Length: 181
Image 1: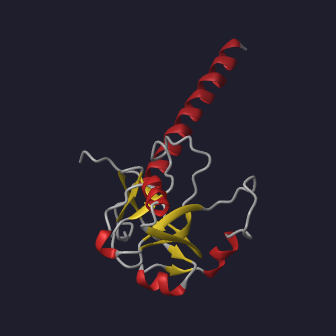
Image 2: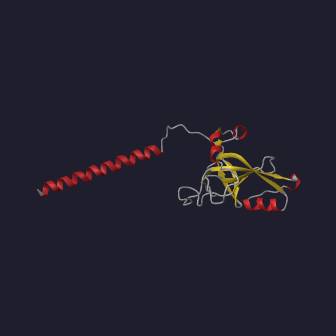
C-alpha cells in the first residue's frame, strides 16, 4: 500500500513538472515569435517636468489631428471628456497634454507620466488618454522651450502665452525607455 502511495505521489510530481514545462514553453512561444509580422510606429518625443519622455500616438478624436499624426480617427474618444466646468472631485481617465499648433515648440508637454515607467509602475492614476490643451505664444519672437506644465502655467501668468482647452482626446501611451542605450 505504501509503495502504491509513493508511486502515485511520484507520478503526480512528474505529471505536474511536465505540465509546468509545457506551460512555460507555451508562454515563451507567445512572447517571442520569430516569424510574427512586426509594425513600426513613429516614436515621438515630449517633456514632463523637464525630462524627455517618448510616446506613440495611436488614436485621436479629431479627424484633422488624426490625419496630421497618421493615427486612427476615433471619434468615440470624445465620450471621455466630462461636462465642464467639472467639480474637482470628479475624476476622469483624461490627463492634460500641451501642444503647440504654431510650431514654436516641436515637443508636447505631458502633465504626468507613470513613475517608474514600465511594468514596475505603481501609479494607479496613469492613463494613456490625454485631453489636448493648445498653447499659443502671444509674441512668437519671444518663444522659448517650455519643458513642464509648471513652466507653461508660469508663462501664462506672465502673459506670454494663452492656453485653450480643446475637446480633442488622444491615445498616446508613454513608452518605457532608458536614456543609456
